[in-house]
Image 1 (spheres, helix red, strand yellow):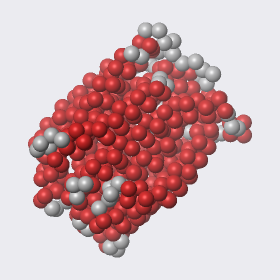
Image 2 (cartoon, rainbow, N blue to C red):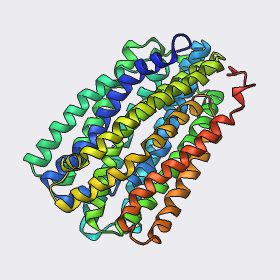
Image 3 (cartoon, rainbow, N blue to C red):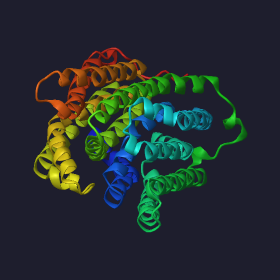
Image 4 (cartoon, rainbow, N blue to C red):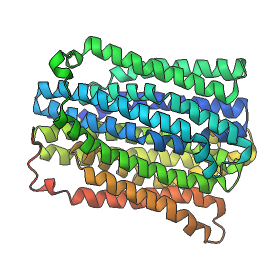
Amino acid sequence: MTTGRPLSLLLKFSMPLLIGNLFQQAYSLADSVIVGRLIGANALAAVGSTASVTFLFFSICNGISSGAGIVTAQYFGAGNDEKVKRSISNSAYIMLASAVIMGTLAFLASALVLRTLETPDEIFADAVMYMRMMSIGVSFTAVYNYSASMLRALGDSKTPLYFLIVSSFLNVFMDLALVGVMRMGVFGAALATIISQMIAGIGCLLYAARTNPYFRLKRGDLLFDPGITLRAVKIGLPLAMQWSLIAVSTTALQRFVNSFGAAAVAAFTATSRIEQLVQQPYGSLSLALSTYAGQNYGANRIDRVRKGFKDGFASALVFSAVMLFVMQCFSGQIIGMFINESEVILMGAKALRITSFFYLFLGLIYVTRGIQNGIGDSLFALINGLVEVTCRIVLPFAFVLIPGIGVWGIWLTAGSTWLISALFCLLRYFSWKGRKNDKGFADN
């Protein structure tokens, strides 16, 4: 990615990421659609009520995975093959330890956390069971995220896609079999997801070990390297803190949502699943920008990093305009795919029309995040997380005080959080000293 037109490179690299992310979202989307339509609104609410809490516990794994990928991309851009292999092996050690620790904590704390969030009684038992099942599957998710982040750092965004496609189709098939035919309820949906994640993770890792020369590690490559580990943690831990803070903020918002009852929880679950899909092009672009910025920063091509930001912003602008039109015109039909209850459909449709006005700001967050993460700006991650947690905790109480807002404060909080966070992201990017005097990556 250190030569050629940035826009074409980003689009070419991000398309497999986008397809892969969409298939990855099919895990939770299939659970939501099948559970919501075959079991009912309460089951859908139970699955959705665990999302923010599960994300909170898994943020450490996600952050370490991203940090390790950035370090690998920087060494790859610098042409240091020995450090690339050391980075691949040492990243595995960190990922394994974080997955076991966080998965265990999530399992043990499930009931306490969901009760603290005032999860409605009618969905509490299913919510606890679903969260515990997801906790068991965190190790398989970590294996996939590790394998995918290493391959993407080396410029391969296609291999992870192939395994996601297979496992996503398997997930849908197993959802229909376990929930629709065998009547295993929410437990069946969770079990289908775990098995699918296991296949994606183990399959991707084994294939990479057999086909990618950087994964053919010798004994010397497997030695613990404090320098590389420290570098990965230095970048990954702030990212983990960022996502943890975001998860705390969404968890706080979930408690606010729970106060409006099961119908609001179901509507929020449906809109959240849809917005997760909307975010996939932004997220894929961000991952591409992270690899792009990491490799060019490693090659000391600061001018190309700046050009990548401009092209990324243009791409986000076009996609945001398209999705604004779609949500304004077809929100009712989209929500109707998840649920049959008219009250939930009407509430969710209006919610999508509200948040779609803020999509451009969401895109700006992802574009800036990709660039700043790629150059190893650890302070940015912390700033971004603090801004989001502050907004999602403070804004709901502010909107409640405004007459007539009521339940719509849920989605106004989401949109306003994107707006404020985007402004802080832009300030951070334009204050980046590398725009004038940063000399790039120091290979040490």
